[in-house]
Image (cartoon, rainbow, N blue to C red; front, side):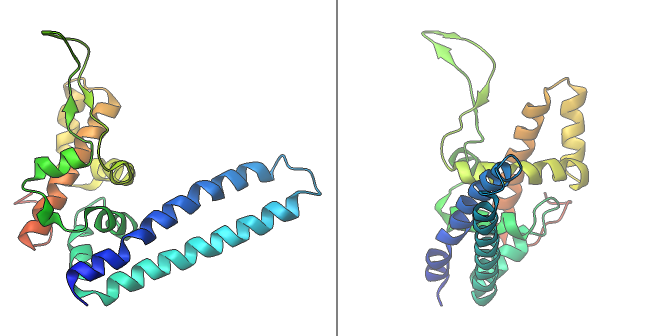
Length: 200
């Protein structure tokens, strides 16, 4: 199976898994206040959703394992401290091929992680914010890995500490770490070498 066909076949499944999770959360929230007569129906739906998510996750993992190109890319991505297999699958599903991007900054822009400053006429108004354009699923998938990376990634931990010392708001720091993670992902996928703090 070619790398291109591997990616095309595997792309929809992480999205399908992500689509099932909000439904599961909604049903969980409905369960506690539900009348006794309704609870069996909610519990049955929850059981179905849990089973579906488990099956989809297994299909994703099996698909990646069976495709040498995807497997190698997954192993490279999870070498970055803070990123696990679930996030790696989402990254692979959204990126398809990293060679589509000419630079890490271009990938960050695709992810909606490039700062955007509001302009009014010839003046600049307000603080810079994230553009939030592009791949929202990818941006969402990087949020919790960024929190982990702020504690355990040997490059991003001191980076976050410097931003805190400079008085940056917490969400600004998280966004900056997410952007740095994108740069690290781009670097290891383009080089084909696992994460190395000395080169990160």
